[in-house]
Length: 345
Image (cartoon, rainbow, N blue to C red):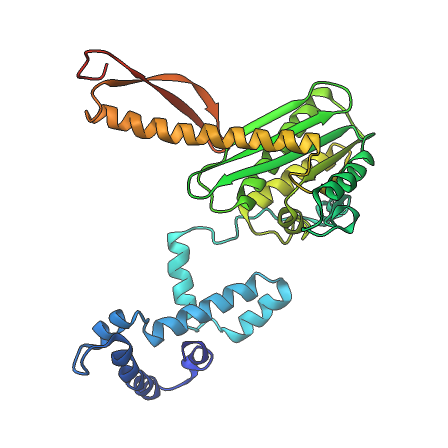
């Protein structure tokens, strides 16, 4: 009912609105399981419902903002539907007083940027057209064939993520120049709920390191290939920068466009995981290393907090060294045991 009321709520009379609100009182009491004589506001709270007037205003306001955000043609339609005397403009004025600028946080991409995005290629097909349940030997053979096709590229980037659900996660990335020393990135990615988020962190870290290497070497007109075993990440990035909504995907696309501006062609390739490809195995080990370092940080921080609360009198905490994290620099604490000591140093 709340979805159907919003379009005609503002055109009906006050008596009809009051009648509709009285009609809704009975199901409110049934849903909430309270007596009929109870207060209407209490019934709304118990049934976890909103007043019809508030729901209609909110849905009309959301529809108005969506139309205004879809270009000048839709904006004119929104202005014709919601005249200046419409009640939602009062709500809009209140919101504007709280926030001086109401706009999306995404960067606006012009036509030139979208043309640059066409230079980026995403290959989301499986090597050799194999399925997930194919033998590991066949996966390795076809994956190595795909990798060998890019052996003449100037840079190869390998990324991988590792997740222990609700415990810790890590991200690893390797940058292999055609000539030069390999770059390795190991990060603790926090307590993430799925491996997709860890893969995003690994991709962002690998592209950041790639940008630093290219700018340091002052190379131009280079060819870059990035290998990942996350098909969902490649499909999400393949939607182009103007469509992605997730914050980390926008940051990844900003890095991709930065690389394209350096006159580099960028190619993303999907590879099978855990099939014995050497560089994929190395990236997986880097991700596991980041996950283990994050779990040690969590255990150390918990134990150190117990120390300073006086619950573990025989332990003391001292800073060991700094460990890089994708969001901040985290200080790791190592726990040592002291003899005949009842208070922390």
